[in-house]
Amino acid sequence: MGILVVGGDRIEKIKNKLRENGFNKIVHVTGRKKGDRKIKIPSNTDIVVVLTDYIGHNMAEIVKQQSKRNNITVMFCKHSWSSINKNINTYIKKIS
Image (cartoon, rainbow, N blue to C red; front, side, top):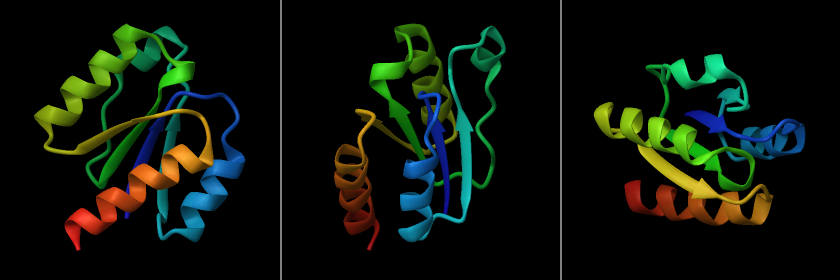
């Protein structure tokens, strides 16, 4: 499965946990640079996770619109594995 993580500067621990949970294509965008607003969600993305405590409202809105346009599930989480894991497990149960 593919996942796009938006927000956060250092997410290596989160990436490792995502790999342990079956995500083999992980893309990360910090959301802090001006160029990040021109984000294009990769075609192999199943889920978009937005780390709400590390990005601004405008960036969150851009990601939300693109996700909706591409029919991709978007989740808004805090920068903690427990929050991300809870949302991902809910998504996996829903598609199973």
